[in-house]
Every structure is written in C-alpha cells, then in structure tokens.
Image (cartoon, rainbow, N blue to C red; front, side, top):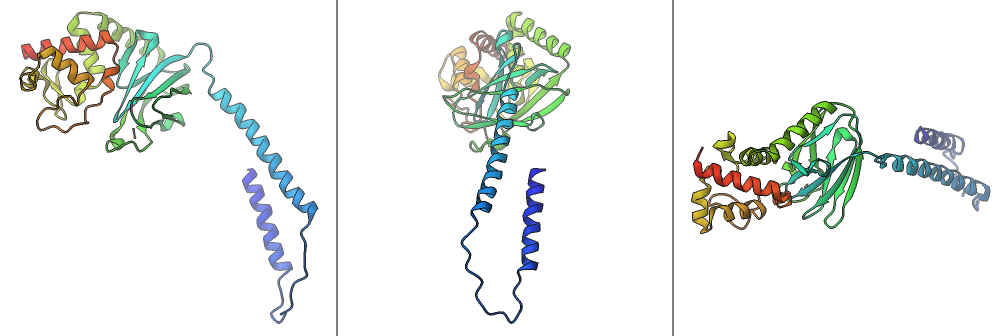
Length: 289
Ligand code: CUA
C-alpha cells in the first residue's frame, strides 16, 4: 500500500515535470542555475525516515510476538547434518523420529542445531525459515493449524546432497499425535526386539537398507541381513561393528558403497535407543529372519 502510494506520487511528479518543463526544439540556451531547495530536502528526508521508523517498530512487535512460545509449547530438538534431519522430543522421553510429527493447534518450539555446516530449516507452508548454525542453537516457534503432510526442505546450499536433504512434517490431530507418542513410548520401553525395530523405523533406516526382520527392502545402503559377513570383512566383533557403523558410518564403508552417504546424525540417538537398535540389528541379522 505504502509502496504503491509513493510510486504513484513519484511517477506523477516525473510525468508532470517532463511535460511542463520540456524545452522547445529550437531552445539551445542553458537552464537557470538552481541551488537546491532546503525545505523540500528536509521534507523528503523526514517523511521516509518517519515511515521506516514506524514500520520497524511495528515489525519488532510482530516478530517478538511471533517468537513467543507461550507457557506450554511442545519442545522439539532438530538436528541437521549432511544430509539429513532428525527430530527428538525431550518432553516425551527423547523419542526420536526422522519425520517431524506435530499436533494440531499447539505452539511448538523448535531448537535447531547443526553437526557440521550451515543448513536452513524450511517448511514452505509454515511460512518461516531458520538457519541451523554449527555451535549455535537457533529457535523457531510455529503453531500448525492445518492437518497434513508437508515437505521439510534444506534451503541453504550445504554440499553435494543438499537437494536430497528433505523429510516430512506431519501435522496430526492432537489425539492422533498423543496416540503416536504413546505407541512409540510403549514400543521403546517394550521387549528389546520391539524397541529396536521402532528406533529402526522411526529414524528411517528402512528407507535405505534391507532388513528382513523389519520388512525393509531398500537398496541405497548395504543389506543389513549381511551384517555378520561385513563385520568379518572389517575384522571386528559384530556388536562393536554395528555400533560403530551407526555412530561413525565412515569408519568402515562396505565395498561398492560410497562414503558420506549415511547420515552421522544417529550418533545423537539417546543411549537407550542406540543400544536397542544395535541389539536389534545384531540379533535379527544373526538369525537371518
Ligand atoms: Cu543441508 Cu542444504
């Protein structure tokens, strides 16, 4: 609105001046010497200054309000790393997930960290972007108000895998979110196999690996049913090998697979979940089920 008004005034004055002060074709004389106009200059400095200051004040108020998480937000820790996102819920026994699941209508405070370079968290439908900066914790407050599945995109060029650094934000009705949290919590506290499988699926291991026990058939990463053979190839005991391959995937890279593809974010898994995952992989690859 303000821009349109200013543009209209400026364009009108220019058009008027071109028409009013144009020189006749045979006029070769110099124009009159003019030394500015103090009153005019003060006016055209003062008005924009007042406008910009007013906009700045309004923006500061809106931004502060926008960043206010209220007294009872859902806390989610977001970890970014080349080239994956992971989410954990400190209010829910550090439940971890490769998707960002959120309940409808509740304020959410995202605390974002990066383990390597600068990334930027962006869900276009959430209307805001926030950088993740190594060594800093940045913050973003959102209140999802529409159920649905939205893309989570990295919008800061962060390396070769930048374009594929994506996952989903899933906004669920509050009751469905609670049910999901409870189900995950129960599974994680349940029998070892169930806990391990939950960690495996929640963190998206199944989208890259094959593991019969989890019904996973993806082929981007090594076949996890062959872990015992891989451990032998690496010359390490199976459980130590599995643990190392999760927290430090570049320590040993299976022949035929490139380095730096498996995210290193899993070193952030809470210890109990990491242990459950290791036990699960060891036992299901051993039994070959
Ligand atoms: Cu991470 Cu681009």
